[in-house]
Length: 415
Ligand code: HEM
Image 1 (tube, helix red, strand yellow):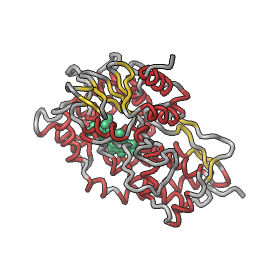
Image 2 (cartoon, rainbow, N blue to C red; image 1 turned 180 degrees about the vertical axis):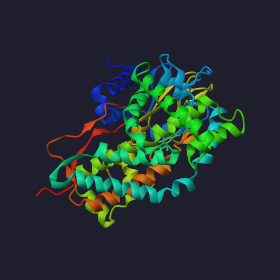
Image 3 (cartoon, rainbow, N blue to C red; image 1 turned 90 degrees about the vertical axis):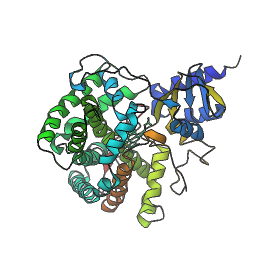
Image 4 (tube, rainbow, N blue to C red; image 1 turned 90 degrees about the horizontal axis):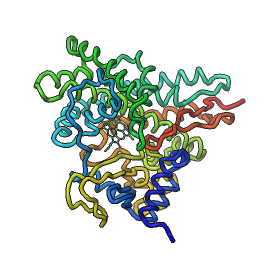
């Protein structure tokens, strides 16, 4: 007997969560598209893969985040299992109206396009300093790890500057962020290193908040502390810590992956770098296509919080869990002709890599700014940049956050 649609969808999600599925989810996305845009895994779990369907769910206020029990425990003091998830649940990323709107307007007020645009000179300076260091480490044909020496360093430097977090502390953040975001995986780490990382980050921010309260600066920590203090109840202490941690972690983890995924594609397709250098391919077109083709965030989730929801003709009962495959939506053949082809000349691409609707990424301009300043300078500086023939890139073993752990390169043409 052929498998039922439920069994097909369940097999897809199960394989996606296996090491092989995480390493290469794209054939599974293609299989899912053949079954339909919205697939029932059970009567109350749905897998949404079609571009239109994912876009609709993200924009429909009937779909939201699970409700959480109110808790007064500050993240820094929370020693119980599940601390990492509870921390994220107090941040803007995982809250529903009206809390979401309250926090979003506070954060948007301090995270303005003007503040982001004003960062351009310091992003350029950070890129150039990092390229100088890459040149030094890569002299005489030495190989360097692009992830460690550039893709991580640039966004962490920029977000630390924006938040007003001492950049000298940034080396601590890569392992902590990585441990924390493991809790976002579908079968996530809910009571191990993620919880320890949540506590350590909470402990990190607590004295910084007191410091900025006494001596405010022109930075986001000071601005959010002021928002917390000026109008009681606008932002609780827990929310302040949760959102600062979110901004720090979201500010560099995903952008690190965007830079790494983009460079890996450039190294893999040798005709691209000359096309970018000559202007036949635009930097903006290249970045949009990297976002579509290898979205740094592949998955997000929602729950059905209203009765009578129907997505692309499929009823989604109240209380259902909804898994949104952003990475699959970005490769929907109904939206993108030849979706598995990397084509930076696509027009009107609008990938869903930053989400859509009320939770659309607050940092998308910043991520685009960093990538658009980094790639041209990198290609200019190192005309002979190439993959290390002796070391294959290694991927992070993640489904939700797609990127490289290591990407070893030569920045000097071999002699
Ligand atoms: C939300 C992706 C960079 C801060 C999101 C969401 C996605 C996303 C998909 C929505 C999640 C959902 O709807 O469930 C990305 C990608 C990035 C990036 C792919 C880089 C390539 C950044 C940066 C920052 C940032 C640089 C901050 C400096 C946030 C915040 C939210 C968010 C605060 C929550 C917004 C809300 O819930 O209202 N991001 N992000 N992100 N992102 Fe980003």
